[in-house]
Image (cartoon, rainbow, N blue to C red; front, side, top):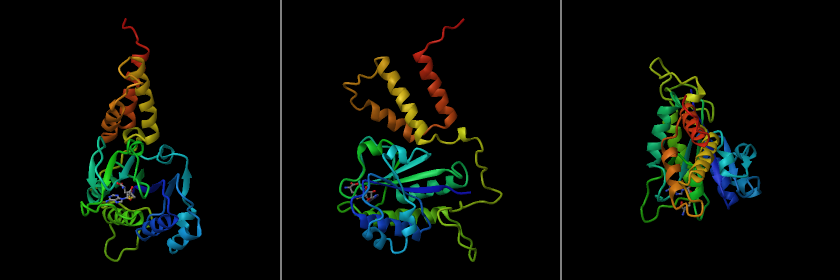
Length: 265
Ligand code: SAH
Protein backbone atom coordinates (compact mmCIF):
# COMPACT_ATOMS: atom_id res chain seq x y z
CA UNK A 1 0.00 0.00 0.00
CA UNK A 2 1.31 3.44 -0.82
CA UNK A 3 0.51 6.98 -1.76
CA UNK A 4 1.77 8.54 -4.95
CA UNK A 5 3.47 11.84 -4.21
CA UNK A 6 3.59 14.38 -7.03
CA UNK A 7 5.82 17.45 -6.73
CA UNK A 8 4.23 20.49 -8.36
CA UNK A 9 6.52 23.39 -9.22
CA UNK A 10 4.62 26.66 -9.76
CA UNK A 11 6.17 29.64 -11.54
CA UNK A 12 9.78 28.50 -11.12
CA UNK A 13 12.05 31.09 -12.76
CA UNK A 14 15.52 29.52 -12.47
CA UNK A 15 16.12 26.42 -14.57
CA UNK A 16 18.90 25.36 -12.21
CA UNK A 17 16.37 25.11 -9.39
CA UNK A 18 14.25 22.68 -11.42
CA UNK A 19 17.35 20.52 -11.90
CA UNK A 20 18.18 20.71 -8.20
CA UNK A 21 14.57 19.83 -7.33
CA UNK A 22 14.65 16.79 -9.64
CA UNK A 23 17.91 15.63 -8.05
CA UNK A 24 16.51 16.15 -4.53
CA UNK A 25 13.37 14.17 -5.37
CA UNK A 26 15.21 11.28 -6.98
CA UNK A 27 17.67 10.86 -4.12
CA UNK A 28 14.66 10.20 -1.89
CA UNK A 29 12.91 7.91 -4.39
CA UNK A 30 10.34 10.30 -5.87
CA UNK A 31 10.00 10.77 -9.61
CA UNK A 32 6.72 12.52 -10.44
CA UNK A 33 7.18 16.22 -11.25
CA UNK A 34 4.45 18.51 -12.59
CA UNK A 35 5.11 22.03 -13.84
CA UNK A 36 2.85 25.08 -13.95
CA UNK A 37 4.00 28.26 -15.62
CA UNK A 38 7.63 27.24 -15.04
CA UNK A 39 10.84 27.96 -16.95
CA UNK A 40 12.32 25.41 -19.34
CA UNK A 41 12.89 22.15 -17.50
CA UNK A 42 14.92 20.67 -20.35
CA UNK A 43 17.45 23.50 -20.60
CA UNK A 44 21.15 22.63 -20.39
CA UNK A 45 21.37 24.15 -16.92
CA UNK A 46 18.39 22.21 -15.58
CA UNK A 47 19.78 18.95 -16.94
CA UNK A 48 23.26 19.70 -15.58
CA UNK A 49 21.99 20.59 -12.09
CA UNK A 50 19.89 17.44 -11.97
CA UNK A 51 23.17 15.47 -11.93
CA UNK A 52 21.67 12.43 -13.56
CA UNK A 53 18.02 12.88 -12.58
CA UNK A 54 17.34 13.68 -16.25
CA UNK A 55 14.54 11.13 -16.30
CA UNK A 56 12.59 13.11 -13.69
CA UNK A 57 12.88 16.25 -15.84
CA UNK A 58 12.14 14.47 -19.11
CA UNK A 59 9.04 12.79 -17.67
CA UNK A 60 7.78 16.00 -16.03
CA UNK A 61 4.28 16.98 -17.15
CA UNK A 62 3.33 20.59 -17.86
CA UNK A 63 -0.05 22.15 -17.09
CA UNK A 64 -1.74 25.47 -17.87
CA UNK A 65 -2.87 26.04 -14.29
CA UNK A 66 -2.32 24.73 -10.79
CA UNK A 67 -5.97 23.68 -10.77
CA UNK A 68 -5.34 21.40 -13.75
CA UNK A 69 -2.09 20.06 -12.29
CA UNK A 70 -3.74 18.86 -9.07
CA UNK A 71 -7.15 17.85 -10.50
CA UNK A 72 -6.66 14.15 -9.63
CA UNK A 73 -5.17 14.72 -6.13
CA UNK A 74 -7.08 14.09 -2.91
CA UNK A 75 -4.63 15.92 -0.63
CA UNK A 76 -2.84 19.12 -1.66
CA UNK A 77 -0.03 20.45 0.52
CA UNK A 78 1.14 24.01 -0.16
CA UNK A 79 4.65 24.85 1.06
CA UNK A 80 5.44 28.29 2.42
CA UNK A 81 8.24 30.01 4.27
CA UNK A 82 5.77 32.11 6.22
CA UNK A 83 2.33 31.81 7.81
CA UNK A 84 -0.49 33.28 5.72
CA UNK A 85 -3.69 34.95 6.75
CA UNK A 86 -6.90 33.04 6.23
CA UNK A 87 -5.10 29.90 5.16
CA UNK A 88 -5.77 26.24 5.83
CA UNK A 89 -4.00 24.77 8.89
CA UNK A 90 -0.22 25.24 8.89
CA UNK A 91 1.86 22.30 10.09
CA UNK A 92 5.56 21.57 10.21
CA UNK A 93 7.13 19.42 7.55
CA UNK A 94 7.45 16.50 9.97
CA UNK A 95 3.86 16.76 11.16
CA UNK A 96 2.60 16.63 7.57
CA UNK A 97 4.90 13.70 6.77
CA UNK A 98 3.67 11.81 9.84
CA UNK A 99 0.03 12.49 8.91
CA UNK A 100 0.65 11.20 5.37
CA UNK A 101 2.66 8.24 6.62
CA UNK A 102 -0.30 7.12 8.71
CA UNK A 103 -2.81 7.66 5.92
CA UNK A 104 -0.59 5.99 3.29
CA UNK A 105 -1.54 2.51 4.38
CA UNK A 106 -5.14 3.18 5.28
CA UNK A 107 -7.43 5.94 4.06
CA UNK A 108 -5.17 7.28 1.29
CA UNK A 109 -3.68 4.06 0.04
CA UNK A 110 -3.02 4.22 -3.69
CA UNK A 111 -4.11 7.87 -3.95
CA UNK A 112 -2.30 10.93 -5.28
CA UNK A 113 -0.97 13.61 -2.94
CA UNK A 114 0.42 16.90 -4.30
CA UNK A 115 3.28 18.85 -2.70
CA UNK A 116 3.16 22.36 -4.18
CA UNK A 117 6.22 24.66 -4.34
CA UNK A 118 6.10 28.35 -5.16
CA UNK A 119 8.09 30.85 -7.12
CA UNK A 120 11.59 31.77 -5.87
CA UNK A 121 10.85 35.40 -5.07
CA UNK A 122 7.21 35.56 -4.13
CA UNK A 123 6.27 32.03 -3.11
CA UNK A 124 2.72 30.77 -3.72
CA UNK A 125 -0.02 33.30 -4.44
CA UNK A 126 -3.17 33.45 -2.32
CA UNK A 127 -5.09 31.97 -5.27
CA UNK A 128 -2.73 28.98 -5.28
CA UNK A 129 -3.01 28.58 -1.52
CA UNK A 130 -6.80 28.55 -1.88
CA UNK A 131 -6.46 25.19 -3.66
CA UNK A 132 -4.53 23.55 -0.81
CA UNK A 133 -5.82 21.36 2.00
CA UNK A 134 -2.84 22.01 4.30
CA UNK A 135 0.13 24.39 4.51
CA UNK A 136 3.60 23.04 5.22
CA UNK A 137 6.39 25.08 6.75
CA UNK A 138 9.94 23.89 7.27
CA UNK A 139 10.75 25.18 10.75
CA UNK A 140 13.83 27.40 10.60
CA UNK A 141 15.36 30.69 11.76
CA UNK A 142 12.35 33.05 12.11
CA UNK A 143 14.52 35.96 10.96
CA UNK A 144 15.79 34.12 7.89
CA UNK A 145 13.21 31.58 6.90
CA UNK A 146 13.28 31.32 3.11
CA UNK A 147 15.15 28.27 1.84
CA UNK A 148 16.44 27.93 -1.70
CA UNK A 149 13.76 26.11 -3.71
CA UNK A 150 15.89 23.03 -4.35
CA UNK A 151 16.81 22.87 -0.66
CA UNK A 152 13.13 23.07 0.32
CA UNK A 153 12.32 20.18 -2.04
CA UNK A 154 15.19 18.19 -0.48
CA UNK A 155 13.98 18.67 3.09
CA UNK A 156 10.36 17.89 2.21
CA UNK A 157 11.23 14.78 0.19
CA UNK A 158 13.58 13.55 2.93
CA UNK A 159 10.91 13.89 5.63
CA UNK A 160 8.33 12.22 3.41
CA UNK A 161 10.65 9.35 2.59
CA UNK A 162 11.35 8.77 6.28
CA UNK A 163 7.69 8.80 7.20
CA UNK A 164 6.41 6.79 4.28
CA UNK A 165 9.00 4.10 3.91
CA UNK A 166 9.45 1.16 6.17
CA UNK A 167 12.38 -0.91 5.03
CA UNK A 168 13.18 -3.75 7.41
CA UNK A 169 16.94 -4.21 7.90
CA UNK A 170 18.39 -6.06 4.94
CA UNK A 171 15.20 -5.92 2.88
CA UNK A 172 15.45 -4.79 -0.74
CA UNK A 173 14.76 -1.11 -1.42
CA UNK A 174 11.21 -0.20 -2.33
CA UNK A 175 10.44 0.97 -5.83
CA UNK A 176 11.14 4.68 -6.33
CA UNK A 177 8.14 6.86 -5.77
CA UNK A 178 6.07 3.94 -4.54
CA UNK A 179 6.88 3.90 -0.87
CA UNK A 180 5.22 1.39 1.35
CA UNK A 181 3.31 2.44 4.43
CA UNK A 182 4.68 1.71 7.87
CA UNK A 183 2.36 -1.18 8.66
CA UNK A 184 1.35 -3.58 5.94
CA UNK A 185 0.80 -6.40 8.39
CA UNK A 186 -2.36 -7.83 9.81
CA UNK A 187 -2.96 -4.74 11.89
CA UNK A 188 -3.10 -2.41 8.90
CA UNK A 189 -6.48 -0.74 8.57
CA UNK A 190 -7.98 -1.92 5.28
CA UNK A 191 -8.11 0.76 2.61
CA UNK A 192 -11.60 1.90 1.64
CA UNK A 193 -12.50 0.20 -1.61
CA UNK A 194 -15.26 2.66 -2.50
CA UNK A 195 -13.69 5.77 -4.08
CA UNK A 196 -16.69 7.81 -2.88
CA UNK A 197 -15.50 7.25 0.69
CA UNK A 198 -12.12 8.88 -0.03
CA UNK A 199 -11.47 12.63 0.26
CA UNK A 200 -12.82 14.25 -2.91
CA UNK A 201 -10.39 15.08 -5.71
CA UNK A 202 -9.43 18.72 -6.36
CA UNK A 203 -11.40 18.56 -9.59
CA UNK A 204 -14.60 17.58 -7.76
CA UNK A 205 -13.97 20.26 -5.13
CA UNK A 206 -13.73 22.92 -7.85
CA UNK A 207 -17.08 21.85 -9.32
CA UNK A 208 -18.57 22.04 -5.84
CA UNK A 209 -17.15 25.54 -5.22
CA UNK A 210 -18.55 26.73 -8.56
CA UNK A 211 -21.97 25.37 -7.64
CA UNK A 212 -21.83 26.88 -4.14
CA UNK A 213 -20.76 30.23 -5.56
CA UNK A 214 -23.65 30.22 -8.03
CA UNK A 215 -26.16 29.53 -5.25
CA UNK A 216 -24.63 32.15 -2.94
CA UNK A 217 -24.92 34.73 -5.72
CA UNK A 218 -28.42 33.83 -6.98
CA UNK A 219 -29.85 33.73 -3.44
CA UNK A 220 -28.34 37.15 -2.76
CA UNK A 221 -26.16 35.82 0.05
CA UNK A 222 -22.99 36.89 -1.77
CA UNK A 223 -22.63 40.20 -3.58
CA UNK A 224 -20.23 39.39 -6.46
CA UNK A 225 -19.25 43.06 -6.64
CA UNK A 226 -18.30 43.07 -2.99
CA UNK A 227 -17.41 39.50 -2.01
CA UNK A 228 -14.98 40.59 0.70
CA UNK A 229 -13.41 37.51 2.25
CA UNK A 230 -16.48 35.30 2.09
CA UNK A 231 -15.29 33.08 -0.75
CA UNK A 232 -11.89 32.53 0.87
CA UNK A 233 -13.42 31.73 4.26
CA UNK A 234 -15.81 29.22 2.72
CA UNK A 235 -13.01 27.60 0.75
CA UNK A 236 -10.77 27.42 3.78
CA UNK A 237 -13.49 25.66 5.76
CA UNK A 238 -14.14 22.98 3.15
CA UNK A 239 -10.49 22.49 2.16
CA UNK A 240 -9.38 22.12 5.79
CA UNK A 241 -11.93 19.32 6.20
CA UNK A 242 -12.11 18.01 2.65
CA UNK A 243 -15.36 16.00 2.36
CA UNK A 244 -15.53 12.53 0.83
CA UNK A 245 -17.13 12.07 -2.58
CA UNK A 246 -20.39 10.87 -1.02
CA UNK A 247 -20.50 13.80 1.44
CA UNK A 248 -19.89 16.17 -1.44
CA UNK A 249 -22.82 14.58 -3.30
CA UNK A 250 -25.06 15.45 -0.31
CA UNK A 251 -23.93 19.09 -0.37
CA UNK A 252 -24.42 19.21 -4.14
CA UNK A 253 -27.92 17.76 -3.63
CA UNK A 254 -28.76 20.47 -1.07
CA UNK A 255 -27.55 23.18 -3.45
CA UNK A 256 -29.61 21.72 -6.32
CA UNK A 257 -32.68 21.62 -4.05
CA UNK A 258 -32.13 25.31 -3.22
CA UNK A 259 -31.99 26.05 -6.96
CA UNK A 260 -35.04 23.92 -7.76
CA UNK A 261 -37.14 23.57 -4.61
CA UNK A 262 -39.35 20.50 -4.59
CA UNK A 263 -42.80 20.83 -3.02
CA UNK A 264 -43.63 18.26 -0.34
CA UNK A 265 -46.84 16.36 -1.06
N1 SAH B 1 9.12 34.76 -0.01
C1 SAH B 1 8.68 33.45 -0.37
C2 SAH B 1 9.86 32.54 -0.42
C3 SAH B 1 9.85 31.77 -1.63
S1 SAH B 1 11.10 30.54 -1.59
C4 SAH B 1 7.66 32.93 0.65
O1 SAH B 1 7.40 33.59 1.58
O2 SAH B 1 7.10 31.84 0.49
C5 SAH B 1 10.50 29.47 -2.88
C6 SAH B 1 9.70 28.28 -2.40
O3 SAH B 1 10.51 27.42 -1.61
C7 SAH B 1 8.49 28.57 -1.55
O4 SAH B 1 7.37 28.96 -2.32
C8 SAH B 1 8.27 27.23 -0.90
O5 SAH B 1 7.67 26.36 -1.84
C9 SAH B 1 9.71 26.78 -0.63
N2 SAH B 1 10.19 27.18 0.71
C10 SAH B 1 11.23 28.01 0.98
N3 SAH B 1 11.41 28.11 2.30
C11 SAH B 1 10.48 27.34 2.88
C12 SAH B 1 10.15 27.02 4.25
N4 SAH B 1 10.79 27.53 5.28
N5 SAH B 1 9.11 26.17 4.46
C13 SAH B 1 8.42 25.63 3.43
N6 SAH B 1 8.69 25.90 2.14
C14 SAH B 1 9.71 26.74 1.87
